[in-house]
Image (tube, rainbow, N blue to C red; front, side, top):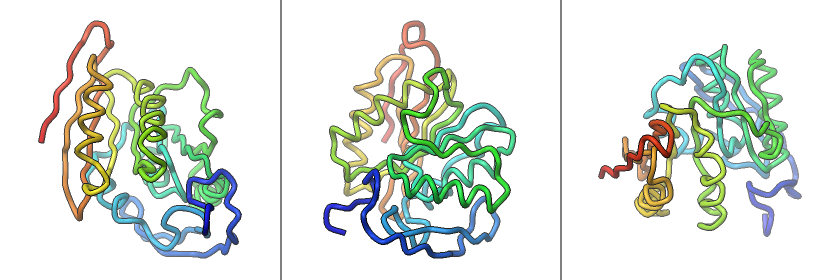
Length: 215
């Protein structure tokens, strides 16, 4: 794709819409994907590891899929928590269009697929689930997490899946150092070369200064 990446805002590559069969929330379904988005031919390994190693989402409130791609995490959240509002956030307009198509086809009317700046500033999240775009570079990745993790509700969790050889351990250390008050950081699962990191917001950063790292 040359300079055209899945994190491009408007991919220049051919759309090449395709239908694939996947399992979401215990259901075998058919979804639409396209060229110019992340993992268009299947649910990628990291996302599969994340989905298999996270608890059911909170039943209500606002839930965030950060870097949603064509939507496997958002669709899973929306299916498991039909009374919650799921925000599927990505910079890739093609990916957002696919999430909207797939949500509509599955009858999931609780998904908002939007650009980052379109999420209202006063919205906070009962959970964040993400296979973050590691390949955007460390500075971009850190800026992304610094923007969204502080928007966790109190006593709520962010779940991130990161490939071990792409820096999961260093990211875990950075998270603990960057959110030292009111948060804790743990590695909760390892599988197929990926690690699942859990960032929990315990309470006010002022009144509840908790930070730990577990191997």
